[in-house]
Image 1 (cartoon, rainbow, N blue to C red):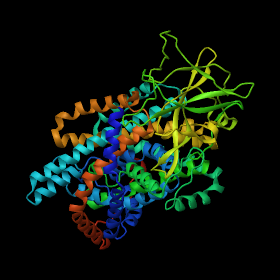
Image 2 (cartoon, rainbow, N blue to C red):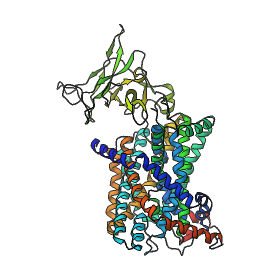
Image 3 (tube, rainbow, N blue to C red):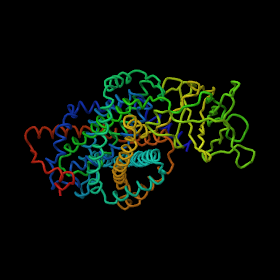
Image 4 (cartoon, one colour):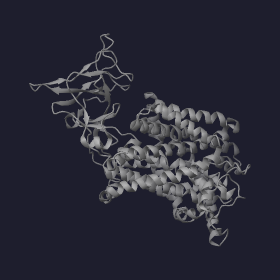
Length: 633
């Protein structure tokens, strides 16, 4: 797995180079200008359209505008809003939020353009089951220019990237995140979570796009409303912090963020990287996925659905992601203080890591020395002595190791590790298996611009008296790392959604436990069912409809595999999702640039006709009929 992650990180270093981010942002600005600030049209005309005032059951398509938007939103408003924002702020700092806003604003223009293109070139041979997406744009648009073979090839390349993103971001990211937070709060094994989620997803996707649209039309408004209300409650309790937080977001978007508590600091460029990367993953702007859902909409006006699609980045990034970020920042969860108390006569120090059975310090694959940590206590004479001794239960003369290969120790001296009173109020006492870390000084961290790093560990409860033992992992550095604050400040790791849950818990203990877990389940379910449809359309493009059933079976199995432990850390999670999002951007953006002019001409023609009084809206149908799709039956 480590070698796979090294390969993925190398690939991501290319596809997520900072210049790629600048190009994507510039293209968003370009289409904003070409549409005459089309974001305004989405926020006005788009709202009128989803209210059902233009719905017509005679138009080609399978679902109405509201359901198409809900299906697309169910893929975008997902765990990227909970887990992704938590990762962006935890690693990039407050400045990352500013760059998320930029993606949200200019991403509206990207989304309008790519969806309009897909509507113009969608396949309506079966008007009740249309097919669309960038692959059909490439196939048909190149064919119009006498380059049918090239179009099929480009479309196929896009589908390959679509399937990569479907399995990584649309599937594994959801399964791992919901499994992690459910196990963190309720000690339910991730494998059980994966099995339950896979069954729920399977029951929905077996019914096709109509069932997906019906389920999404109910889940999306509910989950958004619950989450937004809870966020406003927490923000009202921290309202005095909001002005300073907003100032911090803008200032640190262009200047380094200082290290404080659990936050290791970061450069302005690092904030831009994390803000844009997580916002692009969350909103899917320019990725080419949402056009697949919108292509199922009942309409004979391609631009109309494109304008509706522009609402997605606004709802997803400007509203939901911003609320999550503000909750994390105003609560202080991102730069929280240490959560574990050590007795006055105890400390944690660095030691050489030796776990290969060969005398001498171990090294990683690149030859860099590996270090770990051990506990020490002070005796009556003032001397520091090791408080942890090797475990050798099998009496083979060698120190035992745990299942994950870490050396096992037992406490020789009384050395209680427990949460601070404030941490207990927020999260309760240690239960065991919590991931911890210590901040150490070592070589320069190129991402943060500082020399701070995290030394990972895990809390174990052993023996009948549940003694607390920290099993420390390893850290690669040519020079011996130095624990900050004398090795007394131990932090709890909150990966992805757990950080958001912790932020809610700081305001109202227990709120994060139940709200974020519920939201994570709803978000994961809704996102997984929509992305299954995206992947299905790619499978149809490559192999035909005969491959749909095997694909759906593999999709559900992948959910269980991801939750079972294929992904172990949020760093591995980021590597997988970054790969999926990145390769889709590289495949879809050229298609948008080559044929974007077609969408712009259609856009201007549509609003010219609308301004001249063409196709006036009819009375809005009952909202219940719009939600259920009965107004187009």
